[in-house]
Image (cartoon, rainbow, N blue to C red; front, side):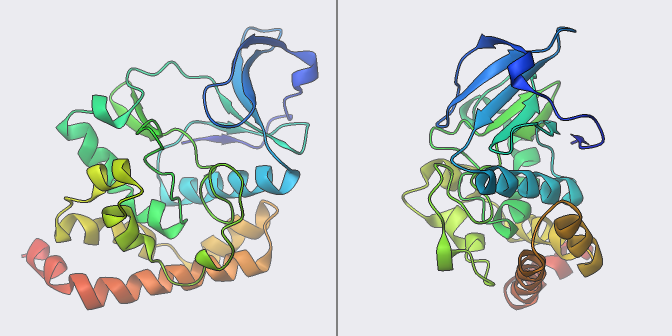
Length: 240
């Protein structure tokens, strides 16, 4: 995934709206004078937009593919470059694509992205054979529709279990619930190999608070603990 934070913010007031809302937030497809298109969501507040931007940065740090996020002039907007998808939901993914999606299970859990699969299984898609998370608005401090998570987003990564078992999240369970212990361990290690310093630099360097950086470091430590406590056998088997 790329994040075009080094480019000038896009300004939808100077663009043509060429398409409508696709998800649960007010949004549209906008086209600039050169013909380039973006999907732009208007969120409840600048805090919601900043939350999603930070989540996208953390996905990028971990190497997890998403759409390409771009900066916006309006502080309450979040935008991605428009991409024509070959597949738009989990039900359309083949076995290899489902394994691709499962590789990033640990990143979804780490960022508390309860909406990783989507309400209709429509938050995972594919383009050119590459599986992408299509929206990270349900990660970190806010639920996908904007409500704050409060204490439910703490230092413990309960999502390692909830994304695989919670009955009110059936598409996540369908995608992640049958992962083998070895696959779960590998997905956790995607996160635990990140350095504390890189997490701090990512969060603080992109407008996040030090407290969020420390929480993400604490959540990584909790995942390391779970890796040793619950999946040490799977790691040993995979290495032999």
